[in-house]
Length: 473
Image 1 (spheres, rainbow, N blue to C red):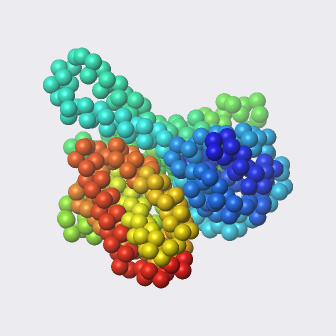
Image 2 (cartoon, rainbow, N blue to C red):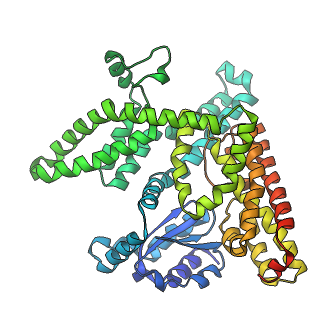
Image 3 (cartoon, rainbow, N blue to C red):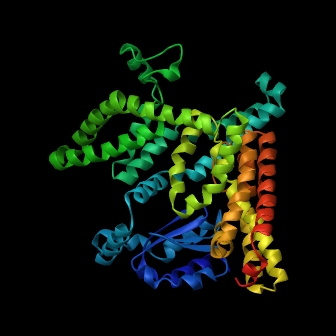
């Protein structure tokens, strides 16, 4: 089935374009907001060729896999004619949104807001991370040529560094822009809040006020980058409130001049003199905790924290709590120059793969053809880091294998944490994440962590799940 055919089939099974409010891609999923979710034919969607899984939440999430999700989404928004749907004037859409909101809670809404800010940036995060990794690798492979600062190798390495830095050096600005889109502020003004945080003038202001520590700049009460993305998100949230308040009160003829000027004067001052120092303490405390738990040099702490984090990650995903980890990834990337949490959590999906292989062998012995077919179809995606088909089609329905898979994944997480593996970015896990690791040795350790998770997920599931449970599944 082509992507065009799949898009049309999905549109048909979710109730047609009159039932679609919005649609967007998210790494491996097509997320669709429906006016009436009851019209969606979930079982038929699950059995459609090309669909790896379906997750029912506030938005209907159709798992298609990395790359394919974006391509199908681009076609789907055209097929569904979404650009002609106006949510504000459609009472059915408003009713659906209100009903969905009633099922929500503050924690879920907060985590969804964080996801909406960072998920659109994931392609750039991955690309920038890969280019920085390639530039670093070239420095290790061609040290003489790089030192000479001449020749094609130097040009290529600098090109790769330039592309990587084009995003990561201005990550604060991109965060401000996306936060503004989420909170309803002017995106360019949100970008300005992010830009303020990395401006060199911050150091001058801090020095004059006696808040700058020249000997240890990072310990300054106020310095460039203080507060990180936490401060930026809060600052843009305040900006949205202030901008809307001012816009309602200034004459229309002066709106274009006074609203941005007054908004940035007020919020910019509050951000620099209050938010950056306050959120800086919060960010520093979080980095301290992360350094102890995630970057600990104590092997016992590393093993325990790595095991626990990998083992409990998928239950967090089921509860929708995993979006709360995105700011931690961002803080590690910007302040610690590498993400050590992502490689550990990536082991969770590998544990599911090992568990699924064990169940497949038991299903084959029990002649459970349906289970065999499900696993064969889902395993390739599992190896590539798309775990939903295995989770929702195999381990979670059986119950116990979901637990044993997590217990097996913990061993891979402990190994990866012990070896200090760090990545240049985060994205899809599994085998496709190997190039994201910072050095060739880390790529090897990450791969070995996956293998350990495969093996231990298999062993614990093999001995922990009775054959009768698989036969009756």
